[in-house]
Length: 551
Image (cartoon, rainbow, N blue to C red):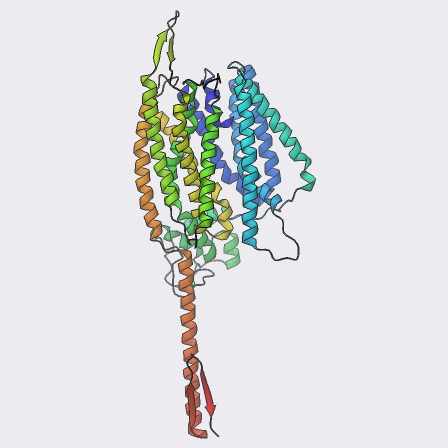
């Protein structure tokens, strides 16, 4: 239902096309922003089960208010429903997926299982359960959508969705005594902001010139914290030991001092910002797909052979199945690849960004063709009506391209995220990705406002063809920028390489110490030779030396 929310809003005369599109984009943008907040609250403070109860209660209340609005045509109820659905949607994927993984995670006591294999099995089972239930829900909604008339469509859809959610949530509540609950523990999300705050508080300090000026620094030669990126050097100040500062524990409690390891983790996370910025335009296309693409389908011929009515939800299935299939295929090919690279190339993200350009290109050509085939007629009351014989399935290519864009880019970003950040942050890839795409969805709200003359009260009077043509420019430029960013990441030194360098330095230092000890041994022996007689030394092929004393 939320996937085609735009068609519900435009059925209300209070929401013309531009206003309805902006409302949907604001709803999706706020929901994406709240994802990271819900993740922090569930992991660090209230627990996942409590957040599931709260967010899903809000979701059910939102669906109930949509049902009420379909009966009463109440604008206040509609705004309240959108607010509740925003909160509910933010907690739907984050908390429920993590909680499902907690229930699937089983380890026998006293054993030492392969942690990586266990996590992989749990991830596969979780994805399978989630996708099967997702597809079953879409199929059920399609059947109800198919056999509903226009007058009762949204009333029945809202009713069925509300009752189905209440029934499923009631079954979920029955299992509360048997669920595995993990106690809340501090998540790495909060200390990202704390490290940034500490660096800002100490912005007036000079950069360290010696490794000893950094708190808990393992390096003995480098005064900079990895990664060595110039525009992130200011974060190093969060680990500087202030000369006239309070005791270390007091500074840590005050949030002014962090160890080098945590600053390094934050720098590695923030170093992904150039890649995340390429997803601003990506989410702009995504917001267009979730609004204008479905509105186009509402104004096209939806007859198919003996079927009198093809539901719009079919295109949700096309887009979702394409995205899931591509993500699964990429995962399968990644496992077959041997050996796996330490950092996966950004080919998938590049292909996804290229698909966003072709998606806009295809949508533009289809809309131009649809407008050419429009037939205008005026009734007895001088009201204009439009009619077209263009089949709704002309929209299939652009929905397939939207699915390819989503499947390639999202899976590629997740894999790259896992190789870029520390182990404690690897599970938060979807949350940070949603946070990045939220900005692009707000860009969509601004773009509709900027190009307001192109948008009228419905699709037929609007110039979506011009809007799609305009989107081709930023999507192509974004693809070029993504190529540049990909090349920049390829030239960056990887964390694994840093570890190798550190090991080499340690080995060299150990060898120097060993050599010094050996030289010291020779000095002692030479001194002893003057007193006790001649000494014979035998050198073996190895680096060790054996010393024998003659009688």
